[in-house]
Length: 108
Length: 113
Image 1 (cartoon, chains in turn blue, orange):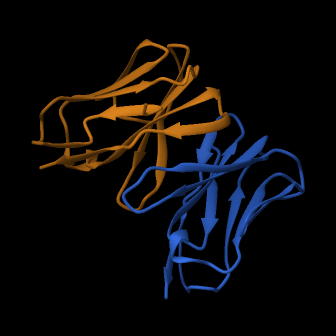
Image 2 (cartoon, rainbow over the protein chains, first blue to last red):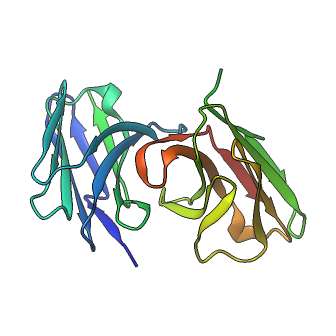
């Protein structure tokens, strides 16, 4: 079945450092979505990418969809404490499958 | 108004009991889901309904039975609760199957003792 893996599982950075999480699917995806879940909260949609090689930016966040539509990345520039949480990618092949998540911890 | 609301938020119950979690969405979406999030934070889909019709039924014990009385509601009934059922259960909805943003409820933290 469709599997979506993310690395790293956990990252601890100091405020101001950059952060990247990588998402890899076992199957070609029709689209990729990214979600953020704050501690104790629920996943909240960030963005959707559809086209091969697509890059989208939201302020300090940059999202990429791979050329083969099997991988994606989320890069945060100059992290802030408000970025703390778990970031999930979610890819659609036959169904929407969530990645394993990357937990980001940011300290001052 | 909360877009996707689920009740209760917390549920503590003994092994062997039967319990239900309710979910309602007021977004007019066609597709609703139940996800289970374990202690490692993995989000696993359990069921998906499209217009009251079951379209995804992952490998879930048959003690779990979803019911969709209409497309705005998707409830989850669990029989004979086990310790391993302890998790956070999220209801979600989206406009179409796997396409477009999924909106999540606040989650129900189920603890089986």
